[in-house]
Length: 400
Image (tube, rainbow, N blue to C red):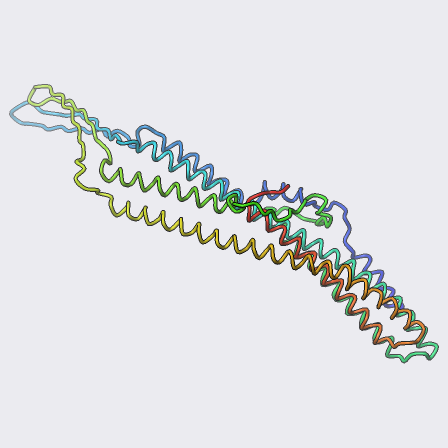
């Protein structure tokens, strides 16, 4: 039994401590500043702003300088120097600016969607860590309880009141508890590694398990139009508007793409000449009809994507509502009925074993049932928190 006592002390030594624990708010600040995917998404916004500046230029094409020289044997040489410039017609510049602005809006919503997704992953890690800490405390308690029972068994075996098998049962049960405990410890390292990758490689020593002090998980609202704030929906709406603007621009360019004006000066056989030119396309037919048809098809495609996403999100919300309701009922049942009853059974079985009324196997069965029920209860709480953490990414709100 000294071996079990020593092992109990080792379990206490490896229990997590809260020194320099990384809080949830601190992790979110680090992720916002250092996550590589988020940084790349912000660069897309910066690129969009540059495209907007370029789209607003009055002249999209540089002027073209041309020169021509002809040498003649029996007469004076001739030369011409000209300058040509292309000008756009029918508000194409405004259309391009509109398209570029809608592209920026789409990138902003994509970045917001990415941030909410990243935030959700980090919160879920903290929820997993909280559940892990609860389970570690549970198995620490079980190890202490098993040590007490082992002391009873040792005295009963020494007094001839029980068989040596009782010591073997307590030793094996403690070994099982110890194995689960160390497995849970290993999972803490996995969580820290996952969190570090989301924080841009920042080092994570200890994850704070009291995350609920930093973050209030929301209840699921029931307001109509709940999904209209979803960033993925907003990004698709911006994409639809951009596609429509591109369609209009393509149709206009098909009939009136641009005009070209030119001015040239030169000398021909000693006479100086100045020539002005203006080239205007005749809108007999749309030269960009295939591109316009493709642009129209893209509008319909993105509209279909939005409808499909809305259906998936609405289905997900229904699942969350139903699942939360079921889990809350299950949590209440465990809290009010299952756990108090099994805890009472365990206390009575421990007392009866001490008085020799039952054998070690009956007590061991009661202890396992209580331990399994308590573990299930922690799992229920973890599932409730995880489902609540999914709400902000669906409705596009932070709830901070």
